[in-house]
Length: 280
Image (cartoon, rainbow, N blue to C red):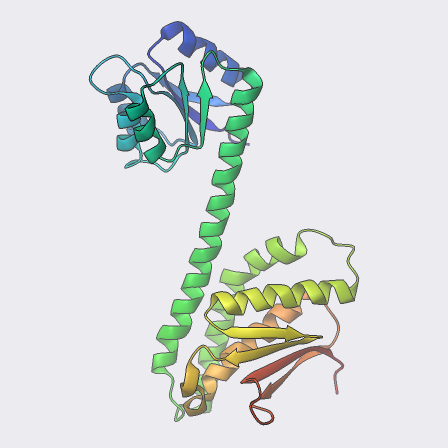
């Protein structure tokens, strides 16, 4: 397993060496120790970073805050400031860089270790969220761009080919996220509990795509369609939603099937997807 890569920015050589040894004891990989802002920027350019520990007050023309402002143009690695003192103006500048932590020297080992773990954990969570958002954005764009090319006069074989491609895109972009968010934990859930969790996941998924949805018992109610009033002109739109629900339900491993009712009743939801119905 790769070690976490840390850059130390500290102009007091004894303090820098002490921090380096401590981090290496904890299992971190110190990619470099910079005694000036200029050196720190150079090290950041030459190495991939996971975390930065930076003293605010440095000797020379560039302090730690200015160095971090330049380094943020190179990497998104979080920074924890280590300092014994800083005037109010410098401290306000430091806050504007949105540091992951702030540890007063002489530092407490437990406090430093805790700040580092929290900073790295938050970065990991942020990365996962951004990855999920990017996948969802890709799906959203795929649906929008593709729908413009769809017409009610499309040949059946062309529609089938498109839906097959859509299903493949949905599988590769959403299934990994689905497994992490819904199936990774609580494997001992009953079918009823899993269905309840699945409906919550599906509700949030459609909501993130811009739908207005509700859940009731074992059903998902779509009150506002992604493509609004255009769905009547193009049944392919509805087929994409049907593919999303049927594929994702299949991933749960739950018994039964998905029943789709469109525009049923006066002032009804646009669509109702009911899950777990027995095969006819």
